[in-house]
Amino acid sequence: MADEKDIYALGETPPLGYVPQRMHASLIREERFGEPKDAFAVEEIDVPPVGPKEVLVWVMAAGTNYNNVWAALGTPLNVIGQRQRGGAEEDFHIGGSDASGVVWAKGDEVTNVDIGDEVVLSCGRWDEDAADIKAGVDSMSSSSNHIWGYESNWGSFAQFTIVDHYQCHPKPPQLSWEASAAYMLTGATAWRMLHGWPPHVVEEGDPVLVWGGTGGLGSMAIQIVREAGGIPIAVVSDEAKFEFCLQMGAQGVINRKEFEHWGRLPDIDDAEAFGEWMKGAGAFRNKFSEALGRRGAPKIVFEHPGEATIPTSIFLVDNAGMVVICAGTSGYNADVDLRYLWMRQKRFQGSHFANTQQARELNDMITEGRIDPALSRTFQFDEIGASHQLMYENAHPPGNMAILVNAPQEGMTELPA
Image 1 (spheres, rainbow, N blue to C red):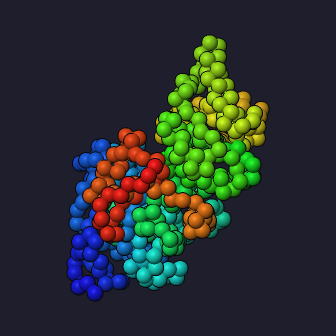
Image 2 (image 1 turned 90 degrees about the vertical axis):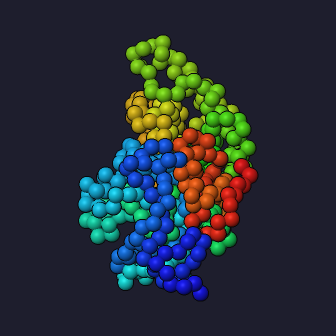
């Protein structure tokens, strides 16, 4: 058994349940705001205290997600300044909204996990005593909800992290630490988008358009649609990415680079410009039908690019179908031709991460081996900035990426795309 010390090196494990005073953490500070490669630095800080309903987790591995690209840049939100305005004292940010690890300590009121349990963590947090939750509002629609490791501090880029008890889910026993740390944020987000908005849930035979088919979200969405018996059609930016989508279960793949009508919707009164846009959108619709193998439209469009693609998504989705969106990676100013919404009774639905039940449903699918985490690359702890830089430059490999924290530092592992 290891000696009880004030701090432990990465890869060195304390006695189970012993909480040292200090830990290693990869921090963002305001003076380092900028490109991710320069924003993260490993420092020593105090281990945070554990509240009555909280769980302290010894982090084995963490996931890379775009929210901590934003945290590194300091935009669109300075997460450090935002928390300080709310009364927080810390002048740093510990990111990381995905993790696998071991329960190391817990508060007096925690009953769902025990010391030594192997867990994966979901990133949705809320106040269980909030008035709206007690009144029956979905926890992810509560005014108190926020994302752990982005809006709240003490994320997974540290030897220890603090979470609320309901964020803990059983680690799939067949998966490595790094694979277990890679899927929850993207997977549970996709699960809610495709199963959380009845009656618009994916069912047997439903065509679904998936933007960004090789990304973390897209790779999860393709598999979720496949497992529901739907027909996923993916959109990517390069024919070299087709094979990955097909391996995930896509029936067809569209190369968006074949089209040029992306961006804001032109002025409807400008007949020439609007006509050109309609020509491009119509050609994209024909390409979808070609990939589907028959003339048809998607019952659900799985959106996250936003500004560049929303006009096409609203145009393309079937009558009484749904466009569901969880992000705006190409921009937030998205135009909608309202005529298609009201006259063809289409639904445009926002969606944000997942509640506890939805996260558990996704986790069960992973545990059963029905959905693969799509782990493409693993980084060492001092490469957190590098992993986010790849995502910032859109140069990351298909699927999801992970970072070794306390798990054995055996070097970078790259799996076939």
